[in-house]
Image 1 (cartoon, rainbow, N blue to C red):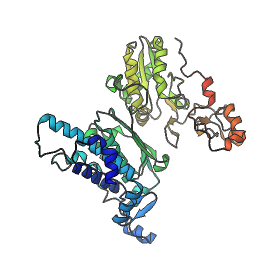
Image 2 (cartoon, rainbow, N blue to C red):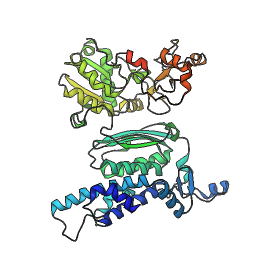
Image 3 (cartoon, rainbow, N blue to C red):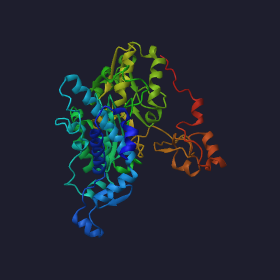
Image 4 (cartoon, helix red, strand yellow):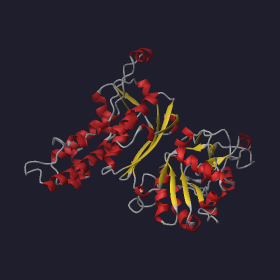
Length: 467
């Protein structure tokens, strides 16, 4: 195994000592084992289940002896261990370069993991919370909450943060999605409240995210079942707008407005016709989000995904020229880059954005200017916002706001189809999918999964707004 690793991962780090590679691998393996460690079940629970206390969990199995989990990890998970080893070695290369530049070490000293003062930098385990006081049942209950958050900050080694986040979420039995990049982190995760509290504490305790506070995490009822699995990865953008962060940075975002300030401006907009002519209340979300819930008097672009937003802006520059823009989205992150892009065009008088997004606004103004449901990107699809239903069934026009996936297996469009229409078999996003669903080809499993239906090609993706 050691020889194979040197031929692959360590090939780019030949100037490091062999002991560095071995130490990195030991640390990576130790972290993997620790990430699978489960808190001990309570004595009562153990007696009721007539089983011994669980120590590690992996691949649906329970391991009571360290030797057994070690054998399992070595047999089934070495690619993951090697990937983390590579990340540790990348840090070593950087540390080595810094020490060389500063002339802080001689010929007999290397930037190894044994170097005092640098061990903490490589020890991802150091940022995992202590769960010795928490029972297994407290971390694995179905009822809980979903956290939505983001933090823009400089991350030199996103792969190490990715490794830490994966271990952290697995340790706390959390599911969800976390995107990490050199520009920051963006996540939505679900689990028991005990687990989510420990997650928040781990986040705000980490040196990179100390500018975050508990208020930066938006909470909603849910749990681990809101997501099919856990997906943590490194990306160029932590919110996919399709524009290089180095060209349009979050640092150039619009002016942030608190929910109270945003509410006042929207209130003035609804009461003063002159303000209405000079101000645009702009929804940065996708059309299927704004369709079931939005702010009154808002402009909701007919875009399928956020990566279409720059094109939408480019084609409507004259519409935005000289206007005051009030932007909003679900949790605030799309407005960070979206407002920066709009400001980069130099056509708007002022660009504001709702801090914390609709989530934070609804916490303070549950009966405010936002009407309908709030769309979320997990298996719940929506969370309650107001009692009103502003959308309707795509087939019969009945008031309806509960999304379902298109019944055609290769289409991932969302459908608003009421119960009565579903009983009639009207469960597809369009006639094209409806007919394909009836055909025999629907049943064969080899059809590729598509994000957009064929009917999308017939619809103008970036409609031009008219003044």
